[in-house]
Image 1 (cartoon, one colour):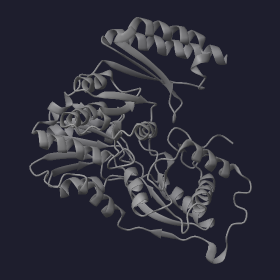
Image 2: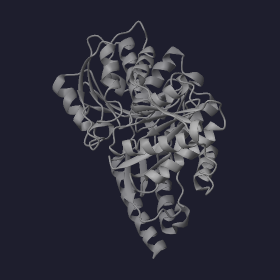
Image 3: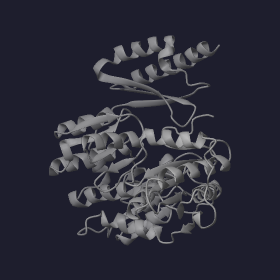
Image 4: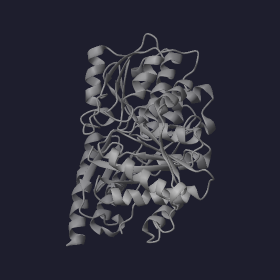
Length: 453
């Protein structure tokens, strides 16, 4: 049986292994057994985004959890960080998110939070995997009154929106600001407009008509061009684009320029440094983050700690070093004093807080860091051969690294969720890094073909 857990939970084509109802039912049983045996009166929360397959998988999870004598609480469509928050707030044993995040509608996935609202450690995922593969998993299940119940929580959106508004300074309001919100036809389509409007902003909303098939479709954080057009049309002060499960953000300033996760981290990090409020003067981001972020922080006495790609690894580094601010270039921003995972809506509020307190425009904050030219190319691969086994590619890689020296860097990794290799080249001259990237892509494909021939 192929491994279930990848970089960020379980993910794949819905209705096909591992995202098939029979497998998800077994996963629900494993989750119920693992967490149910560790807490009396165990309860497990289940939330989802707006994909059509979410109904099918929600029922399978509920059946699996209830069949082992544990109660399931169904939240309906809710952002991933909202499920993490409610897992803590409701004293649940675990929280489950049914979402494939930024992937197309035909995919789906399962992410799991422990009782403290953090994503599971690798060893817990390993144990769940062992349980799922155990032929005796469903033996000795309860009957009669021992079977668990499933209940729907009707005010999940209300609870989460109150939490978000409480993170915004009480002396501030968004009165007079025009904000465009692109909800990606995803999990944030109800709560995001509610929060910004109730804080006083004049809002214009797109991507708030999910039909189960249009999540992330030419909208949201993956397609900020749509947001850019609306910001310019409505002469807005800021545009906010979420992804399908609303745990990440891409913004657009009043001039129509896109603000990514690195630029938002720079703006927030430098603001906190100036106030003396950045814990340990440190921001955590990944190896993919632009060198400009590191330079911007250093100018104000701060430093950047890099982790592996993935918000769970950012969070691990934050917890290990007791840091409070971290994120990814893709728009996962983590404010650990408020949340246990990336939160697109919360990040938008924090950015607006800086705008209001400093009296500057979004375009000014975008310029906090000067971006180094950076190129990321995706190479579709037939097989993820260990990179160290590809001799021709390794020679090309060493040559590029030697030529870039201290003025740039190269990062090559396989995607954790797709059959892709990602090649990132960064440096001072765009033409040079373009040539390096093209050479590395060509050599990677040639080396893989030679290795598999």
